[in-house]
Each structure stands twice: as structure tokens, then as C-alpha cells.
Length: 56
Image 1: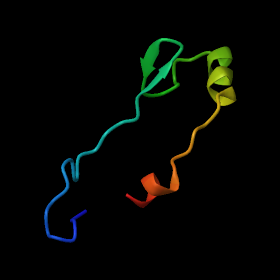
Image 2: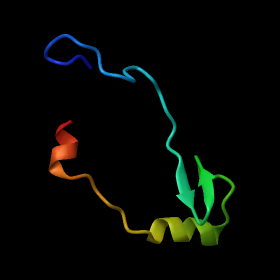
Image 3: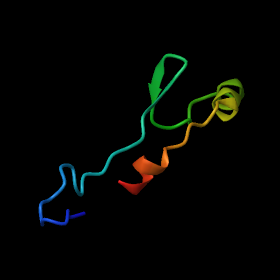
Image 4: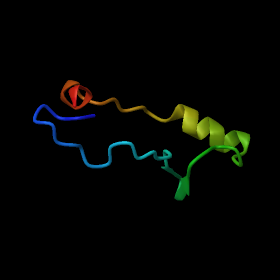
């Protein structure tokens, strides 16, 4: 993404993988979790972004 004044945004084009902290563990995927851990993740409250953050 290029800004209006033709400057390049820092990190443009850099891919990343989502990392979450679940009960003390930093994880990228839930592949190795048992059913109880997966249920804990599903039951968590999801926090959304504010309207201002979505516009950025």
C-alpha cells in the first residue's frame, strides 16, 4: 500500500503468521491441541477492532 504522498509503508509486502498466547503457550495453529484446549479457544471472547483501526 502506498500513502498519498507516494511514500511506502513500513512492512509492506511482508507476510506473517498469526501467533496467539493460549494458556501460557505461544502457538501458530491448533493442530496439536486436544478437544479441551480447542473448546477453550472457541469459548473465548473475541474482541473486534474499533472503526478507526479498520479504516487504517
